[in-house]
Length: 198
Length: 328
Image (cartoon, rainbow over all chains, first blue to last red):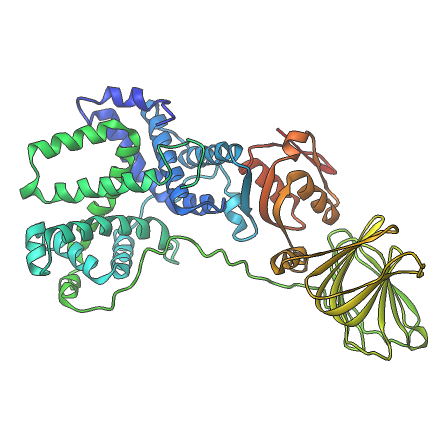
């Protein structure tokens, strides 16, 4: 890791108790406030015309840095922090590049993200959550979806799933591993909020 | 992988970390087979970096949410049902820029036997002129065009600026455009002409056209242009290069209100922008001006340019009344 920043310090503090109270707070904050921003963060990063792998690297870098900051103090303006960090990472990369690509015409709002806006509505109704989950599951390839449902709904072990699906445990693990990553991507990015406003 | 500055461990590192996190997650969920050693390895991995933690938390929160699946009773049936597989991991948002041609339809018709008439657009303006012979002329920003159709001739002069000509060919009445001492004669054509001070640039899109100095002088050449040719003519000479379709389209992107740049320096981009906007962009230092970009930007939105410079290049932007000053 090139950037040492606060990560080492933060990690050192929790070597012995990974779920130390401080880190538990960071985790709760991250899930509650940062993850819901993933959709617009990805939209913003996509403006830079970078490769998928690049964008995922920057996303993860953003998450790491904001978590390091939150370890010192839980930020009051999460959205502002996330986008400031993202912007700085883009700029930093652009400095090292011969040519910087920008596609600013499409979806100009993505560039207009007001950095001091209040965070989006946090309370997502349980029903909304279920709706997203259903949509996300429907989009998984069939066998991947089947493995996920058997594990999450029926509580089957990997071995049982392998038997029921007449396949190897290795394949089941792969389905589950790819399944959770695909669900994360779909649920955090692809599914628009339902039209209703509360 | 391409050589890249060393920002993270290596390009694609995030995807590997995500995969590792997913692997731990699903193995931990498979309680019967999770050993103390596994837990130690997991603890060790997790404590290595906040990036690992964040990746794990992200997936875990999704996996935990999937517990709500219990509420979806229909899913149990679904597990047994056959359903057509669908690819789900469409990640990138298609970058199709939709070309919306919004041109002022207010330009009047005009009889070609009419006398002289002048058309002009303001800075940032565009206008479509439909001639009664079926020809069309699109004027770009800050352009002046004078027509002279007296006596059945078809002659126009591009006094300044840039225009796209789509000409209905009529061998008996050749259509000619004068610009900066050059004459372009239509031979069945669509072409664009841009006046740049003392030189004229002619890009031929369809058909053919002849470019010659006007008035003709013995020493100078004339040439017939074919599609893809771009001629640059001055009082002293003429050069012709062949452009790619992509480049020609980029050069005409003003017709949909955007400017497209390939490998352009910020200095060049600013210069082009300034043709379209009263509020001028000033690049205050040469290092910033030398930055090279590929970009698609709205032609008449100086703010978009400024945000780009700020957000993607990390440059400093200062807004003044009549100018936006960009510096490091």
